Length: 447
Image 1 (tube, rainbow, N blue to C red):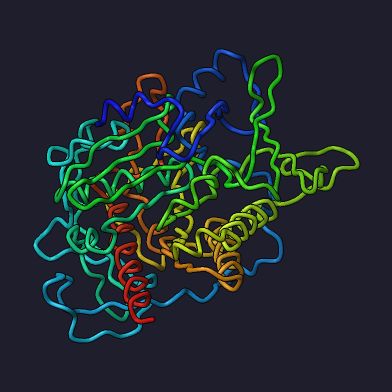
Image 2 (cartoon, helix red, strand yellow; image 1 turned 120 degrees about the horizontal axis):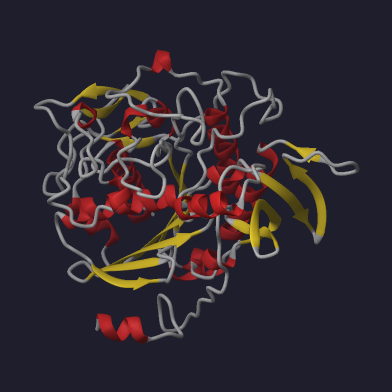
């Protein structure tokens, strides 16, 4: 069956739908740095599937966001959990409102808080397999997220499969979204190993199937959520993108009517040179200095893109008929210290930071605030919207990145402080996701 599926060239994920993947997307390194073609081609090999770390550009005193107070926060959506067992065989005896997203990291009782190892999960991508590539410390695995007012239940694959039985879930976003999918695959594979149903030539669009639970999991890759094309000069990428702020990226949008759950995220790709278009006209730019062109800060295109995506979802009639649940995952910060990715920046911490060590006035938290504002706006437009807010928790986990332990032979000396080791803190995202799905499922069955 798998062989038959792979041979059907006219379809990607289902018989009634056709994907056109004629676009070839490429990222060639730090915006505005136009070096030799040789160096650019090397950078391309690294960043083809890895978004440029979002703290590359904040330099030269530029204000990235407009009108933000340094400590500005927005209400975090509450969910429900229980301090009792998360096992599906014992329903919780008490449920109370709890803000799962505000808390701190505590040491796990009995040591490691991991669910799998790089031997028990064979699908860990090479670039996130930190122990394989020489990471020696393991204390970063011995912490769990503790909400201030309750306990976050551990991830239970049986419960997850019960909720999503017969359903289709897609993760929509960049390679950090892919990191989340890969973590979830490892968590679920401890219960059932999926069948690999589809992989495009660039390994950006994927589909897996869990036959015992009739559950399909997909990865739909999108840099900006809206249409974004890199400007080319003589066949070479310029790292400047034309964004159509009012046009959703059809590569994921065309799959939307077939989904039961859409986990959407974005952010890392917005920190680069962009020409902004709306209504068929160029309306401005980001990181440019040209006469008669309106300059915008990063929050403008990010906000517009999130708004366009949420509006499209709210207006999707088939999505409403299926009662599709849209889950927004908030921004997970990169942690380059003492430099940027190409100037010696590194991330070699071995344990989490405390909340007092985190600067909530930095732009990473402001990215989250923009996302939350647009999430609230989108939810008011109708549809079933939930949020997995990982921003606060992950700002404290500079120890969770591969750093130098990512095994890329072409980029020796460069650190990956954007993606996350597996196993590692990224697995907590699925703990939060499961808690949110349980809440959404309970609400659905109560109406």
